[in-house]
Image 1 (cartoon, rainbow, N blue to C red):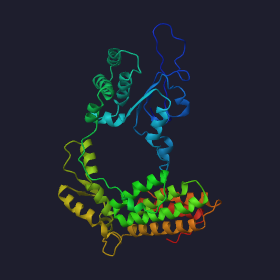
Image 2 (image 1 turned 120 degrees about the vertical axis):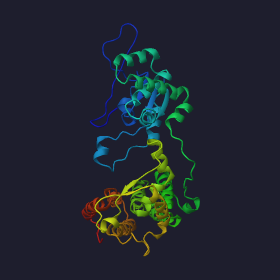
Image 3 (image 1 turned 120 degrees about the horizontal axis):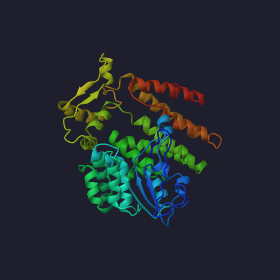
Image 4 (image 1 turned 180 degrees about the vertical axis):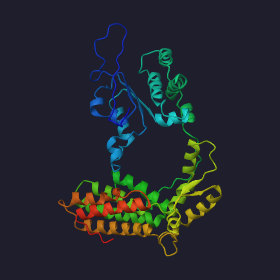
Length: 398
């Protein structure tokens, strides 16, 4: 339920007549499991309360960061599909949906998410309490009665009429083309597993960022790492790290990319979902070129400027050329140098890759995760990145 100060796990036992003392559910004794936080629910010690014979589970796929994830942004949240598979393997029946997103869509707040889960669990037969008794308890409690009652009923609808639930909780989106990296870019490659997944997603993103030629160079560079790694070990840590790090330094957020993202129909749809009718968008931006000219505050780019943003997004082919008006800024030159240095460093590491040097190679390949933020913040994080490179014995000639 809560990860801010550690996970919270609650037990509830009820029965007609005499009940053994204690409220704790025994191993394999849970008839219902409400997974409001998938990370906590799929912890082995909590899965031990479930059984494939008797346990009905309802899970929210909402991501709740742990304290470690908040403190260290390099720690990634596990994939929901894997967590759900783990939960499904230990229960009799499983239903799942994003309870926080559904609660926001239905009620404009997150507080009702828990009762959406309770309603779904009741409809699945996991809670052997009459629905009117649950609603009576909500009323007796006297807190947000109308909202919690409606959430309980919508949770039941999520199971009884999933199409209606999706229609009410998922905003309608315009059909739009989704970029898919063409198969020809992967001709001659031998990727599989997580590296294949990473490359498929990031190659498509690089096509949107620039073009197919850039995506092809990215794939070729990762393939060279992959081939060297395969000759040495079955591990894929190095290839995964390079796939992430090389992409991060390649697809930096410059003026062209920011403009493209702001006029992306997917972004506009997200805004519409959060603020219905919010068509007259004004973006508060502080481009480095204006900062260099002495502008100390952000500038509002209103609806009349959106056509200019669309033109700027299409001008991305100027990126890094002598005709790029933004490319002469210090931060943009530094970003290009970072990419060149990382590419050269990885090439040297791969050329001398051995069993003894492998773990150090992975550490170096993962370092781009240290570079975060924009402009001055990014430049400061680059100094920290440089210091760490030196600690690992890498020349920092940039």
